[in-house]
Length: 276
Figure: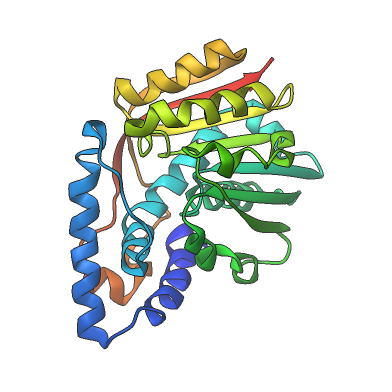
């Protein structure tokens, strides 16, 4: 099963939960698609995106999650340190800002392609609690050979009282940050304390996977944190990336006919780091 096929199942459930008749739903989803396009174009200028509406979450999953998940998969494939991590019997992954599901779906695809089946616990750390509705039962959609579980950790990285009580996830083996730091860049003055705490408290030898828009403002923030907190950058790059041929947009079914094409190309910056 590829990413588009899993996402189609998630979208079916999400679509059924949007109130109104079909015409009303489709109209609101199209508005949400336009909203996301406009707001992402303004991220570097301080745009803040609101995911509290079901239509906005549907639109994000439809357009972006497959592209981002495949980026995660491809970055893992090319880095032996992360590949080796999934040869262990148990792996704990903290997905920072990972509510939309790109992080764990990309890892799941890597496991499927390479026929690896460790027990993987994903902790989705995100401010928007309703993302949990999309992914809490994803393990029921896949072959039971792949032993994964997801739990949701509701935390706002800009509110110290919100994130400070949670510490167990610092013991994760892998921390992923997929298109998250760009979304909170305009709140960097509030979020810096959270990231300083995370990077300093992460256990030795833990790995970090950062993927985001190819803009100096975004990746330099990660680079500065890594330098300050002894995170050795073991791989990095910037450039364009496309969906692999095994992802077929027609697997999105009726949604592909109704809405604009999902994202198939991305201009990214990535970093893979390890805590020393």
